[in-house]
Length: 233
Image (cartoon, rainbow, N blue to C red):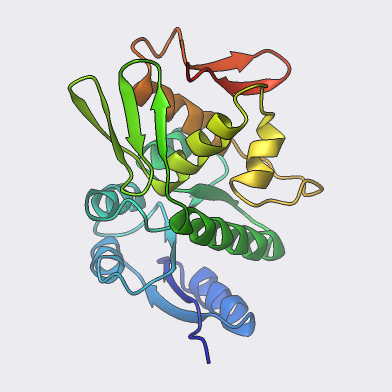
């Protein structure tokens, strides 16, 4: 008998925390909760959870710092941030710090469940794959260990960033649409109307790592009206 998927919900609002717990227990997950940033960080670093739902506004330590501290220790842990719809800067910062995705409040519980399932599904696929990606003359990426080099500089990646690069590399003969990346990397069904900037923010973060000049990308380029293309050679 396989074990239940374990979620950690870090949320200080009692009604939201209780509601999310009930929903995910009903869907067959094992759920543990935390109400403050320090408590959430301590539990997250135990390595016992398959995914973390992390609110940004928390007492003691905000979710952005919790996410950053988790990523310092574990670049593979799936994290979905919960954020107020108006906090655009928080969304950008959270994804830049290594969150896999975000869900804006107020959110549809059904869609949140689908997005948790999608992130979990993609994290398992990504963990099972091993590969090496070479970009240009100086960039080498070890996708198994989530690291690489650009000349003499050492690079580190999250699992999601590696999946994006791997998919773009495998399809480098043509631009890949943003919607295709959402479907293939995040696992979102194409018919779902999902408002998210997660693809664009992940692309911007990758450019800061692999591009000599991120404002004028040479490898990870935008093809107007078509999507993104990785020019690896």
